[in-house]
Image (cartoon, rainbow, N blue to C red):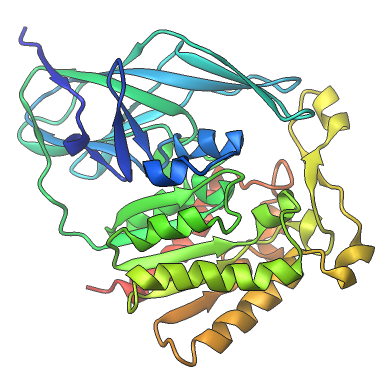
Length: 385
């Protein structure tokens, strides 16, 4: 049997802003080195290296493909084990296989103290068989919630980099919900669902715990060519109790100003948070529900005091109202700036039948709902070809 080994190189990877050479292979990043140099938060360091929306793309006649990779698993002290990250393979856009890689590196996180410990592990292999016959474009979607250091591909036919995509580019930034927390597979995150439904090229800068209007994220977005830019703002500012109203309004203006430096006329949509009942009227920070953790469940609670809202503490209601005001004001001179209330994607009626399992993150069915609605409300109207 023919076996051809192909190193994974940057020209095979899409959806990443940078591909870092490592001792064993390459590591996709969703923020460039200049931005990473300014990150002091371990959570964001971990999130940007998790390749949500990133794919290995190539053309081949191969009927089987293997990928050697070094995953990085997360272990939360006191919580049940997380499932292994999922790798998916699509042939001419149709998902035809799934797999995972055991072993690899381990990050142990203590949510009560915020501490991280790291243990280095060995590479593993995911194998995909029974691929369709003939020449085809193949995409291997990398795990959205597990760092993957890519080592090499093996196949029974030659692999060539895919041609440049003619599809419009959608650049998105958001929180863990955009990152894909609690989605079961990389094509099951709501941005991937929306992108695949409308046939657009996704660059997903959704960072679990990391959507806090960081200037380095805005500069990264400024420098990426895109046909549509969307920014989802709100929940992480509350989760972290990151700022009060005095800082929030100018931070939003500054974030949008920076994006507009590189995208002066690109359609830009500002989206508020989807419904999150625990923080609609109660400010942050969010914290783990220790009683639930004692039962082996991961759940969150709001720990802020609603009495502090008049003094500037943020709730989702406050943020939604202010985002709507900011966009209305700016759009008088910027006809390509738009606003979407996140409750149009997931609102009170939806929460009756599809409650958030851990009080913060949607499940698979809700990711599907949000993705379909986003495709209909935002992508299809603004990227109509």
